[in-house]
Amino acid sequence: VADGAFNSYAKMFHKLYGVGVTVLRVTMAYGPAQPDLKKLIPYATQSLLRGEEPELASGTRLIDWIYIDDVVDAFLLAAAIDEAAGAVLDIGCGVPVSIRDTIELLAKLIGGTAQPRFGALADRPLDSARVADPAPAAEVLGWRPTTQLAHGLKQTIAWYAKNL
Image 1 (cartoon, helix red, strand yellow):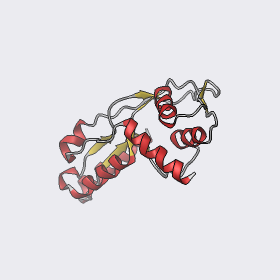
Image 2 (tube, rainbow, N blue to C red):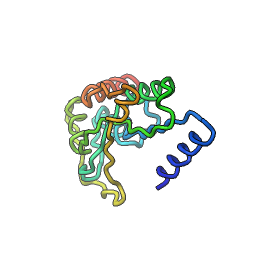
Image 3 (cartoon, rainbow, N blue to C red):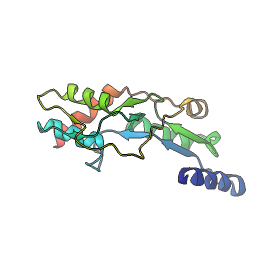
């Protein structure tokens, strides 16, 4: 609901005052140097690199992951393209991946003996999947995500391994 109100105000300011507002609705961004180490990817990456088993919920929730470099590209394009003013665009891959599949891929890429402990925590009852429709961003901005999940996770792992 808050997202809808924000979008409405942005559109209103664009129409009434000519403010060049573009709303980018970013799905679940990840990548190197994420400051909140309690977030899923930094937490699981650091745990696995240390040989610890990250404690997680069931892992059934679906996530539309988007690598941070792709997010930055979208923001830069939105700022530079006049036709983007007034638009509300999803910035995501449009492909849902379960948390379990994501963290199992992360563990495989890291190697080692530590494995995630799925089911160690309760699922959060209000979490829901939101999958982007990247087609409008492609049409308005000429933007498409270019980073595959495995490549983005490798980049993330490399950063945390160096900066742990």
